[in-house]
Image (cartoon, rainbow, N blue to C red; front, side):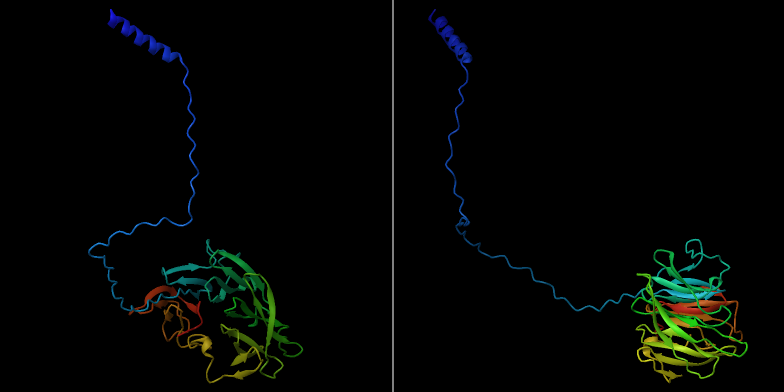
Length: 334
């Protein structure tokens, strides 16, 4: 009986405790902790018996300098069409094809290609338009068409080339050749330059007239990379080319057929002579582009265009046909 009463008392107390609401006891506030700006000192530990030794560095021997060949484009004229040769991948493209349209058809004769020193732009003459074309080789579009001042029937305005300042230089004839009532040449030959980035042109200087004949005038050939010198022909209406001369652009002084040409022009042997015995050009990549043809023929329709890469023993054939001009992105270096 007592056990029964004891269990009833325990159950009753449990039921009553369940009905009493819980009392929340607020947390005991913690005193603020002051953080010292100084780091806590860590007691030193005993050093191990053997301290770790640093790994010895290997001795570095000097290595040979690695020379990366400079990229260099070449341009050439075959059958009055301009082609671009890239020795990096041995590719050849024709200016005027579906991917390199400059606004005229394939029957438009082209000549006088001139590559900018950075390989970004190509300038050439489009005879059908009597104009100079400036073409962006990176973006594949025509940036400018510069109309010539000279009559297309005579040798007058010419492309001199590009300089290190990024400008293209060309000559512009003022006046022309007249034959009635007397034989008379143009008034003067001016030199202009064009900036493909800004799109502007400006007058630079005149080519001197080095012959006193009334029908004489000068024809520009090439400008050096510093735009310090110009090589030109002394010519005359109805007569043709005469002697070459070197003009110093800063002073206007000139010298007829100097014994040597400035080194900045590089090797001129394969180019600016009336009929070079061998047609070739060197590039900044150390390569050489040249033509193999029948020496008995002035124009060999079966000539072969060859490229000898720097360090190579044998040249590779690039194209075949009749070639009239070869140029390099770099100055005509050797």
